[in-house]
Image (cartoon, rainbow, N blue to C red; front, side, top):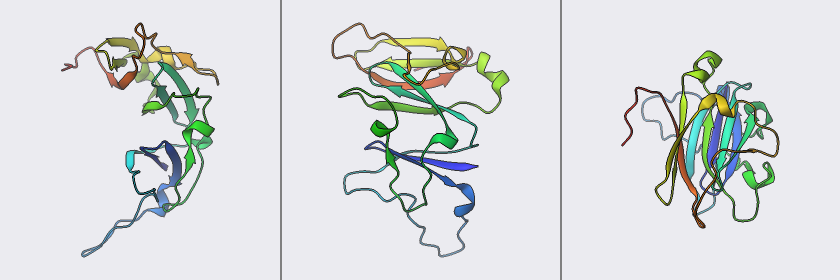
Amino acid sequence: DMVVTVSHSGYIKRVPLSLYRAQRRGGKGRSGMSTKEEDFVTRLFVANTHTPVLFFSSRGIVYKEKVWRLPIGNPQSRGKALINMLPLEQGERITTIMPLPEDETSWGDLDVMFATTRGTVRRNKLSDFVQVNRNGKIAMKLEEEGDEILGVETCTDNDDVL
């Protein structure tokens, strides 16, 4: 298993889970990622090396990479910039990083919910994003100029959204 860490400035890395250990009484902790002064960790998750990860951009495009393709590092390294890994355009940024569930049979039961800065909300099946080529796939067409994807979350038919 790998620990995937993403920073606010768009740096990403994977570190083997075996490099982290539980601390005992009186432990002071340790840094999970070296960052610049104004940067901080925004997303951290544990995933198998074969787990697909979806990257949703502010322009409504989704990219997909397996965890083993992410740059490997140690707990103190910064990682690699996402703009160097994905074919992002000028001004485009990754707004949401979502690892797919390991149980592929549950993909058909899950939905993906999008929210934009102009208040548009949309729901798609998660299975629509299983086949994504290297250049990405349009996840949501943004109607208005200046509209961006704010966030993406998985949900089911029984979930309440507020």
